Length: 162
Image 1 (cartoon, rainbow, N blue to C red):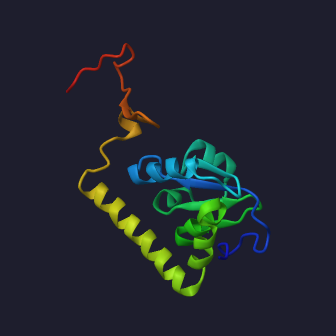
Image 2: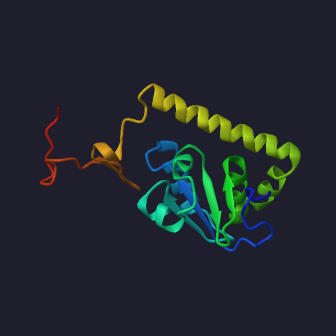
């Protein structure tokens, strides 16, 4: 499991920041799942391309972080796609053995297949309008409650239905 070229190869990972697409239902679901998992390495989950992500990682291509899961280690290591999923699983108490298996040549094929399947599902959601709850349109996601509309004119708790 190697970091992307140009990063701090060989430095130990003591903390990971996972950049996820906050507009993607699957990504938000996985974020919530990650937050419930016992960890061996601390994880921070930050919306990709957000002001916070841009402030923390000014050298990243933030547009690509919306398309491909990205994990950043505390020493500047950058993991993308399947490598990001493997390093995130490695950080979880119950999934470190799986991460080691996925870091082998045969396991890497399985990890890549899983990432490609998720990407295909996301693309289908965009194509067929499955990404109906957008923050830009006034929707917000609250864990335990789901998507809540808080657009203009809803401040008093009543919203006009168009």
